[in-house]
Image (cartoon, rainbow, N blue to C red; front, side, top):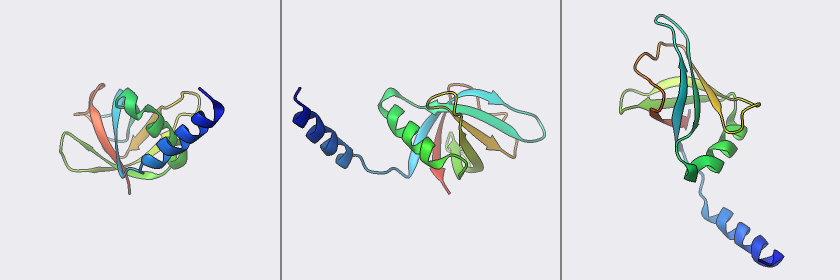
Length: 111
């Protein structure tokens, strides 16, 4: 591949990607207590969204989000980028998350 083809191809592909309001993430680990704050370690839901999620997470670390699990009521939380683990986010929740398990997929959106 020639340099020009590479540059033109990457410019076209980035122009076709539109910002998303909602991203799906997969739960890797749940840190939960029965009466108080909880945390969820998450990463991209599939390989196709890996780079999108990593970029979104770098740009939005520390921001307030809402997430939904299995079409239930949205939960307000805050997401942070785990800097030593590429593409991993830590969602902090003020309420117990007993119904969320590893491998569950959550829909996450900025608030």
